[in-house]
Image (cartoon, rainbow, N blue to C red; front, side):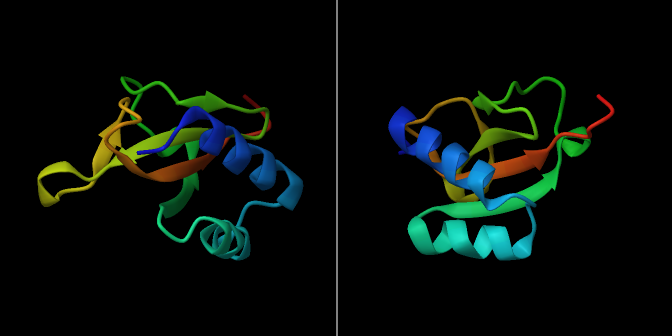
Length: 91
């Protein structure tokens, strides 16, 4: 489960990190060791799934782990991780 306050804290920390890269993910993983983190481009995310949280440079999506498979979810109760999806500056 990822409560809204945790998602806000993740977004705030990611924003302070500047460039989002593997080193940024490692920092976030240290702060939230029980969560899974993935980094990608927002263009790689399915249009049918709205972000759980939007920021200027990135969007956050929730990852659920039900039934032994990872998938995107809109249910914070099922969330076990976060996708940081970088938004292209030209969008």
